Amino acid sequence: MKQITSIQIDTTDLSALSQSRNFRIIGESGCVFSIQVKTSGNKFYNFSAQKFGNANVYTPAHRLSNAKIRGRSYTGSINFPADADGETYTFIVHAEAHFETEFAESVIGGYLVSGELVGDTYNRFLYSTDIKQIADVTITIQPKGDDTSNFSSATNALTATATASPVSNDPQTIDFSFAIENAATDADGFGLQKIKDTLVDSDFFFIETETIDHPGRDASASFAEYGMDTVTNIGVGMEITAATAGSLSGTPIVTVAEKYPLTAEELPGVPYIRIQPAQTFSDNVTLTFRAYGSDSIKNSTGIDISFEDLKIEITTPSTTTVRGTVSNSTSVTVNGTYGFGKGLASSLRTYIEGFGVDNTTDNPITGVSASSSAGTITMTTNQTLVENTKLTAINVAKKYTITGKAIVKKFPSSNTVIYLGLSRLFRVGGAS
Image (cartoon, rainbow, N blue to C red; front, side):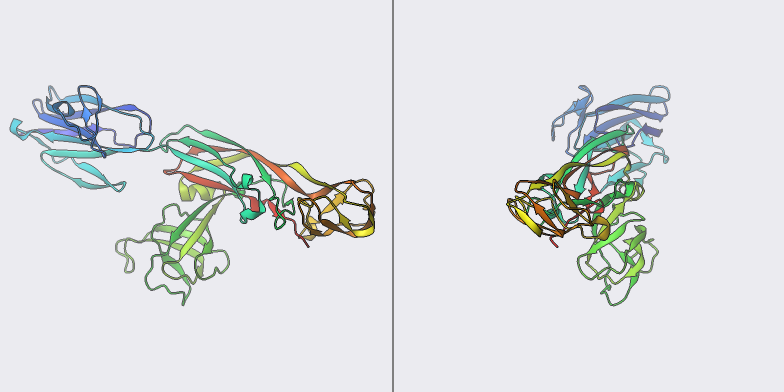
């Protein structure tokens, strides 16, 4: 029997773009073989037309039949089409036994099952390997407050996106300009107070939720390790911020996220996390994980991202006008209070300014009776003001603009949202 000793084709992941890959069959002169290439959707490669045909259509042109090695090798190419949704191609080579041809034992095929390479086996007359075409994915940057009712519906819907192939090495820039606006409601329209002047890397985060799969865990004792349904997108450094049952003790941090070895006495081969400090979680509890900052985001998602040129600026100050005459009173009646609120910390006291406002002594706002068109602002010092005097809030505002850019050097394997933590940047003023 003549032997084919090597099959060479690049099996690394394809991008979503169209491209061609060469193959080379090496062996003794006179070896005869046939080739088929098909998709997971049962489309076969037409070697005459040099493209894939329609699903479930097969003709003699969809097989390179009885090709012969002349000399030491045979070379050819396969044209892979663009496919933004992704695809799996199976490259199959048959050693034609009736032409006295077989594969050498060094020719080992590989097969993808659920995205993992398995089944490395030797077959005298059949070689098969899979090539994955990875779908384009989208990274979304989205502002997110812990309490969405504090922000306008337009703010809660803001996004900035970029789409690329996970196998691409071309950096992309996501420029964003987010108008962050306080909700215009009696319950939450007390203005936004800026907690800090500068955005930093750790103000951006990724969220993942996964469920504990550890029979026997019943919250009767603390444990540092928990078996999980999966640890996909869970990385070292992530914080556990919520649990669907029980309570958190401190801020648990993930220190290990991997699979137990197959030789482990308990849960062999099962994904697990190790956390510090230990917690009293039960089986089937779903945990919420957050990865703060680009390093932790990369550990959990594989995204290589950085944030630059970050700024927060007031866009719309809070203003209103005096309703009726105010005479020697701390209660200032106004034509709408939205955007005015009491500062809820001594370092975040709020004030008003306007013609005739007495701020000769420390005069912070002490309370607000909310209304879209009326309402009252209570001051520390008695005020005497004429009707329609314009008032402007200090240290609280209706709207800010956050600008910056995210530089993405490596995209993830699936669509991913990275959040900008508004609750780390702003707090809402209070009624009292």
